[in-house]
Length: 245
Image (cartoon, rainbow, N blue to C red; front, side, top):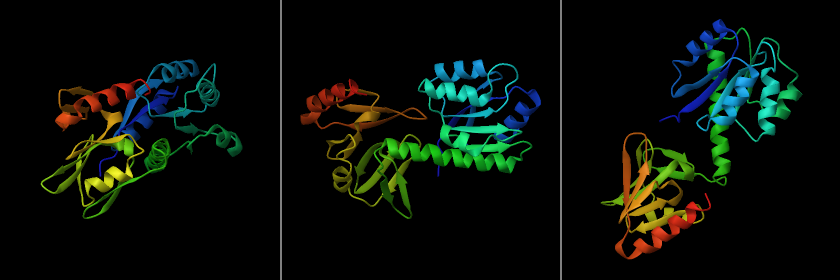
């Protein structure tokens, strides 16, 4: 199963420790180092200005100036809430990091296995956040196995030659659940039956051209259709939805 990419900011002032961390992260599936900083001020600036970050790995001590924990606290006060792993040679009291919402504390010296455990914990935390933001709802996909996605993971659901395909940005998953059942289940999650064969996540549409609905994905675009008699209704609804997103 495809793991969602995590774009990580690293805050580490020691070059050797930074190289070690990069080396341990390199083999991990879909973990991308999006930014590297060495001071608290740089950490605050990068995390505040960038919109492509999913998480942070920060050292407790960042040389002179603000430390990692102080910088993280300032970011939270500014409304920047990025799941974070704290790397340290001396772990702070557990109550301090718990109140701040640190996902995991990795004490130096650490192994690749220990960092991988922290990344797995980070993935689970991000997945739980996405689940709650989606209203605490999972969408079941039943074929040879049972897979669960959040509504936000799904671009659209297609019925083609009696086969149901659930389209995400990375793959199309076959399901035995009829499209009408999905329509009823997802009626409060901005899914709309735009065509008898397409149940569309209106929040995931990138553009509409005539009767074609387009979605951004990892490689190229995917496309769903609008029934001719629903074109005006769907386009108007989508435009109004954009004003609220």
